[in-house]
Length: 305
Image 1: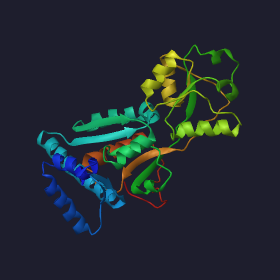
Image 2: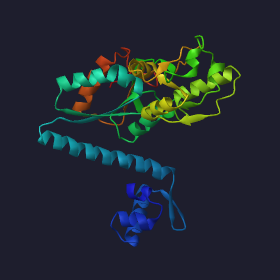
Image 3: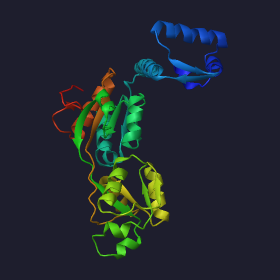
């Protein structure tokens, strides 16, 4: 299923499987006979996956991921380690709390290998659902997909507006009004990001047109580099902004804008049987990140994670 879903034609799928096209066609036909429903639409030479095929492919990918994880755990045990745990986190917790948790994990469990990635909640949730990370620290999506996860709430992530230190706005008397910030360029999360959506709603609530010049980027490095070279403004986690301001890279704009967005927490897939190293890392994260004591499912019913 993985091979058929990744290629647009039966011929290319067959080549990726090292099969002749007739053999690949029989393989797909046999699979559809076993399932009892078509998994692809045939449009000439093209294969177009349907909803049933998408569901089966997702579960097939999960099975392959679990096999890869099993192999990695075996190899880790054979080499004297405990295994690898992958964590994805939004920027604020990384600066403020996650680094402390990582230091504690390395001290208490030096045999556990950690992989850390950062990004937006949207991107990280996609990684979690695809099995690319074991633990996500961020915001759950506000739709039915969140039901696939266990969720431990942590708290709110304060957000601020920031700019380079020599920005013209700092010549104005604080607090700076949103009307004064509107004409400047902005570098914000890509469309759909929580902080960007919140800022856009504030502009609309005040009957102000949205800024015409907006760069969309989820990269903190890109954002900081762009601020350094322009008069652009951005919205950052307060923890990130304070860290960068300490090194005089940026300055926080004292404004009349309150960018309060939804709280964040720890997310893990319900469908995955978590390894012992992952549970050890989770325990340390819960202690360090100081989540709300009541662990709950996103459906509102108690859950164990």
